[in-house]
Amino acid sequence: MNAGYYGELRVDKFIEEVQFPHRVYIIPDLHIRLHATRYIQIDTLILTQSYILITEVKNITGILLFKGYPNKLLRIKDNKEEKPLDCPIVQLDRNSDGISIILTKVNLMLPIHQALVFPSRNTIIENAPKNRNIFFVKQFPLFIQNLNKLPPVLTEEQLSFFANKLISLNKNFPSKPLCERFNINPQNLKKGVLCKHCDATLLRKSLRTWICNTCKTKDTNPLPRNIEDLFMLIKPNISVKDCMYYLQINSRYTIYNSLQKMHLQKSGHKKSTQYTKITQPTIQK
Image (cartoon, rainbow, N blue to C red; front, side):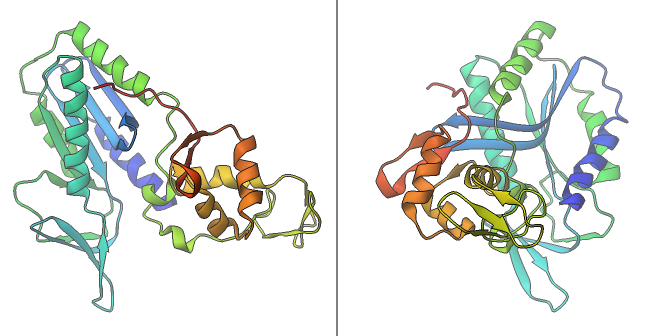
């Protein structure tokens, strides 16, 4: 987690080196819901009068091998085993399409550019697609400086309007789940209802009382807090089945009762019901 976080900070530091000739909006960690089932999540979006730059940051060390068509990314382990990863090029294309949809909705046109940035010095990239903007972090500012030579397309008023539109759509949206953000497999998370003080597993002693055998803390209502953690760690939409698995609770009723008391947004029916923590404004078709 620290590696992923500091990787993004390192990229931000190099962006700060760039001298932008006109007004610029730099929006980190942009999350927007396009409609009920489609989201876009962008590590850093740079918005100027001349262009939009969508940046994907991957702080992954070791040997990374691109394969296509279709695009795939493999991580080569020390034993030569190939581990497939979500392809950041596909993510960039999806995000570009999402931003293009928003531009169309507000009747604006602005060139969209992409950049895949690797901040780690210990990353080796093999077979990188030649037609894509893939950089190590020290190369990134020069790429932005070249984009800054493009002529303005929007007025300052249009730029401000579009920036505020994106910011309003992003406002109060839940952050990208930490497992996705830092390339952690959710299956590796510690299971069970966890203590708020020491993260040890709580034991249920009665209907309302849970006790931590490690620090001896008593908790009368640990489920809502642990369910909140699942939103933060795994995904913005969770089901009763998700909660039962990660919290290691066999009773659907116990989980269902806790979810109802949390006043979450619901979608779907019966066992397929999904719960969402925050309602986000959508872009109407």
